Image (cartoon, rainbow, N blue to C red):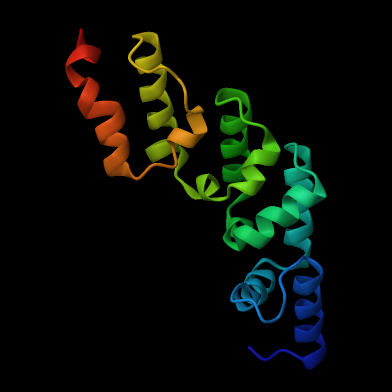
Length: 157
């Protein structure tokens, strides 16, 4: 596909306005992401995230830190934000600043790990010093060691 010079210049200008300078390694990712998503879908994502509690600044922060979230289907973004805000009691703006969790599977990681922590809390095996969402950042091996293997006998009782 061939693009006009004006089209590429307009995309590049939009990326720089959003805070990614042309010399940044993220710049080319930004170009390809904005091209792939398109202007209408981009605007729809902004509106969706606003409806889920993000400000425009939150959206731009998320954009600069993890462009790929723009390619995630709206329904998946809504499900994950509902989980973070309504179930895990996270502030929406925190999810803008910490983009990694938005990319994890809700079914395969976020919900199961959340339920493990809740069970450990109920059995008084977890003191809750770390916030639930921060627990989910751990590598799988570390999560298994810290939350499952060390409590496996006590949690079954």
